Image (cartoon, rainbow, N blue to C red; front, side, top):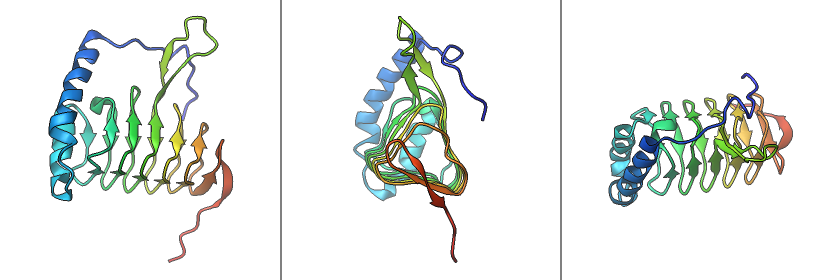
Length: 183
């Protein structure tokens, strides 16, 4: 991944974006959130697709997952957003095939430029590559790539890219060991 600069990713939201978010919020309350049973899995995918999400029909999105902007979400086959995940996707978030984001995790694809007097918003995409697992209550910051097959330990805070097939944990997240599949 190329390094992102805060000045090249500064952003202001259009009126269209603001109106879409209001319509999405109302839709979420009445047509997404109440459909909690597993049999409504494809219904939730359909609702998100109607708002521009690029989601595989086999993806799993829990009804209690909060999604800020469906049009900034891409989920591949069998990707999963667990219960009470907060997908704060002002910037793009991509979740690879067979990747799991566990309960109460927070994905944040934006921040503010603390070096600027104006404290401008900037967007930085998050990539969770295939076969990765972000464990419960983890935080994934803006511009981070979670490498293929890696594991982010519970309650970890990730501010830098995670290499493929590694396990990280802590705050800030640090390398623990290489991930090996035994069977």
